[in-house]
Every structure is written in structure tokens, then in C-alpha cells.
Image: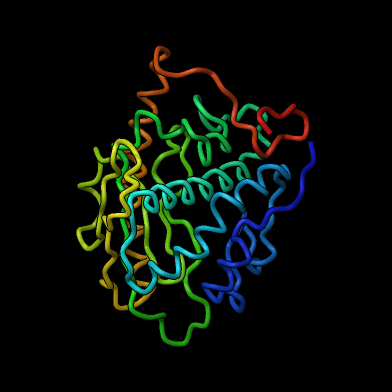
Length: 257
């Protein structure tokens, strides 16, 4: 299997967030965003670029100025956030040969697989909120995930990218999303009508306000999703034992890449 280096934050996103002056925290080090790279199979890298990063490079700038989005675009946001969560999970667990990403899907299957939303699409909620401007004295805008990494949960994810705070949650826990966020519960099947279903609002004075609120809410949301995931993973009738190996441990064979 061919592997190459994938930028954790794609170059288009680094440019969009103007994140070129200040370092980011990564695995205990402060690094330029451009320098944060992880090993990824060439096929996965290409598929993520075509299916996620290309469309997101057009969608995120529109969201950042307050434009509304459609149901399929909300699904794209879900999958894009899941990609970040999955890449981070693999990077932090790279040297744990016993670690498993998901009991049902590999990372690639979850992020871009046709069947990964089957049975749960209509239970997913996307949340968006915008910041008016960057903090005084700062050049770089926000560029980071706020949801942390769990042991059982691979659904909840949140982050702030430039001035856009976003999250994906199970609808069961949508009441924990701060009320200033605009939310939309995805349809059970993709709505291809082109109807606009979610309009983000400018609710935070500064980007740091978006970061603080998103990170604070994410603590409780992650806990509840972790508890739910743990209950699901103890029910052997609902899950299968599939390894999570998109970014392979050096001593293991890969599956599905």
C-alpha cells in the first residue's frame, strides 16, 4: 500500500483562516499549521481531497459570510468534521496496536462511505454559528477542533474554522448545544430539492468568544456521546468487531485501503 503525507489542515483551509503567523499545538509541540502532517494511504488522501476538501473549499467561505446551506451540504459538514476527528484519533493512537477506531467502520468507510449514515442520518444535527471579527492584535483566525477524542464515540465533533463554529451531534443531545447556534436535523434520506435548511447567524463578537463557547459546550456533549457509544459497544447484537486502521500501525496489515 502506498502512503504519503497528508496535511492535517489542508492548505486551502490554512489560507482561508490566514493561519500562517502563529503556531498551533500538536502532540505536545507548537508547530506551524503547514508543518502538521500525518501518514495516510494515497488512495484515501485522493478520495478525501475529491469528495470532501474540494467541495468544502467552496462551501466554507459561503458559510462564513452567512449564506444558508442545503441538506446535502449539511451532510458534507458532518463528513468533513468526522474526517478531522478520525485523523486526529489515528495520530494520537498511532503507536497503540490494540486501539480500534470504530466497531463498525474504518475511518474511510465512516467519512466517505455510502452506508455510514444508514440508519442514523435522520438522527444527526448540524450546528453553525459565526463570529463577526477576529480578536484585536491577532493575524491568524481560528483553526482547530474543540471536541476532543473519545474511546467509544465517533459521532460528535466540533470546531471553529476562521469565524465559523460548527458541530455535529446526535439529536438526542441537541438540547446541550448552546442556543445561539443555528441547528438542523438531517432528513432520513438526502433532500435533493435544493431547499435551504440552515442559515448561520453572526452571534459572537469575536472569534475567541466562539472558541470559548464551543469548547465549553463540547465537554458535556462529548461526555454524553461517550456514554451512548459505550452502551452501543457493549451490545454485541448491534456491532461487529472491525478494526480502525486507515493510518496503519507499522506492525499491522491495513484493511480497506
